[in-house]
Length: 295
Length: 295
Image 1: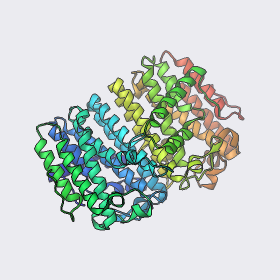
Image 2 (image 1 turned 180 degrees about the horizontal axis):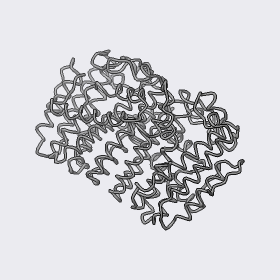
Image 3 (image 1 turned 60 degrees about the vertical axis):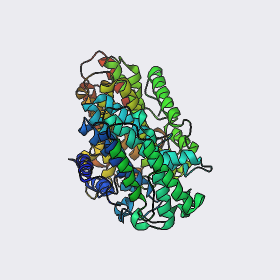
Image 4 (image 1 turned 90 degrees about the vertical axis):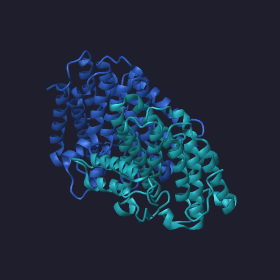
């Protein structure tokens, strides 16, 4: 999937990630681990989470772009870390990711495990750097990212549900996919000094849409758009919206989520731009399906 | 190894860890992952890092004990996370830790991987919580912990060196063991509002001593004191001070490090108490060896 961001946002995101990775790979770094971290992050996928983050920051004024950039990099680093660990043999055992070998295939399991750990820590280091410049915003950003990535409700919890004998489906979906989209909208607001509490709904709705679209692509076998092997949910016994609702039902659910996302955008100067972003997201998410995004 | 802390510090550390784990295992948490996190942290080892942290905080006045407690918990959580991941099959493949099954033996590799990730994030969440109360101190604490745990110079980097074809021994030891002791002294100072830049030397010296003591125990086969299998360094081809210097040379190195640690304590009201802690540490580190700790 190509980038969702316009060229300006895209440049900001890639530059912020490059700066963070350059620091992590600095003097005295073990070189192969540093390489494995770069392999995990660059070149990226759609960068959808940091794009949403920066779009919300812009809608809220983006008066401290260096803080928003750090937040965007932190969020994408956590996402990349989760992909590295999820691909490992004890989870999906995926050979490829974004059209190239997964990190453990390219560098071995030990370095994949460490690359994931190091990316998680690098994400928080980016926020610490922001906090040294703007302590109150930094503290908020850190708390949002920790809650949406850890336990009991973040992406670690989401992945953890897959190891439970009985699964709480609502908690699973909220944590597994929606959490980092909630992080995107809330961190975008917090980075710009706005109230993050107005923004979780937009993230949750986009996350819901994203999960259903991912389920559709997995079930319909669009490996190119997915950038990873298809049919994994069925093989790994994971819940999938297409199995639960059928293709048409899943498409309807996707449309509802996107309409809900647009309806949930708080009133702000950048409202129109954000609506456009959600519509663009919809087209990118499921390119082969006719998706109505206006309710 | 029993706790190094006096009963008051020990109670503070355990209470702070229990509070953090209770939050992580809160409503909607996948229960087995929450259990695996507790298994990794409680009951603990010597809690040497948070004990040093709180001792330095006290030496610096400890005017915000809730901030020091959060810092102590965060540091111990990162340490426990590193033990969980280091024990996994792609690293040491250790069956036991602290006298009970390692996390991956008890809960499987998937949950061990996630428990480690979740503990890392929980550590930063504790600091985010501190940062919401004291934003400037929180930002400093976060930066110190990120630097000493991630790349290029933290414990992830230290572990990463073991996967390199050529090892930078100085960087390896600095990152692998000393980093979290530097974190202990610097975070103790920062938590109490003192200047962390005066404190890295004490941590580095204690870390050096700790590494040599660990090497001695591994080589001399004191599995009880170590709480994990012995002879692993030789088996895993890891550098070990006993191989490099012989037993007597390693003991001399240990004594030098401890004398250096005592000499490096910055002038502060709690100086005498800190000296006593370093001496106690020495006796605990190598109970079977006669260690002179006064130069």
